[in-house]
Length: 202
Image 1 (tube, rainbow, N blue to C red):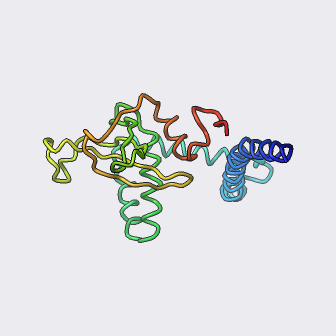
Image 2 (cartoon, rainbow, N blue to C red; image 1 turned 180 degrees about the horizontal axis):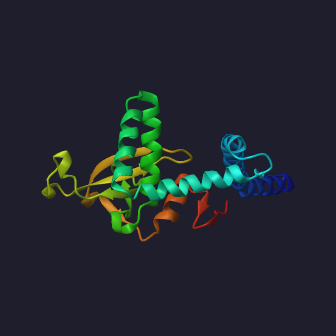
């Protein structure tokens, strides 16, 4: 029985090590093949025969993303993007998915100079149970919450999915954690299985 438990633990350890890498590689391959199929077909149609080489569709996709990133630094391009987003926000289901993914990625990618991203914990009632969250905003005046209210916006993510809850929490109810955002987010998103960049021992 001990040997079976040992074998089970080794298999689970292998799965935890292999599955994230496999999922990441699968996503990269899917993105590459999709870009190659879509943009590659366009390039084959545009270029003279013999000019197209396999992989040019993927390279074109990267170039387009880079160009879009440069354009977003332009005021006119940002206005166009805002207009496109306004059209997306008119479609109920697509609006929810788009806004959730966009806000989540924006939260992760913005620099420290763009706003506070303090890692904190909040106790749930008097149970001793604590939630890990991230302070996303101090100024809540646009919501009608005055500065004397001493509340901040805290994002509490859900494990293994894109989503979570945003709560207006009193500063006195929060306990700051001296942990980098990336490591704390990794810990929460993996339900504590991954810790500080390595697998947590069971």
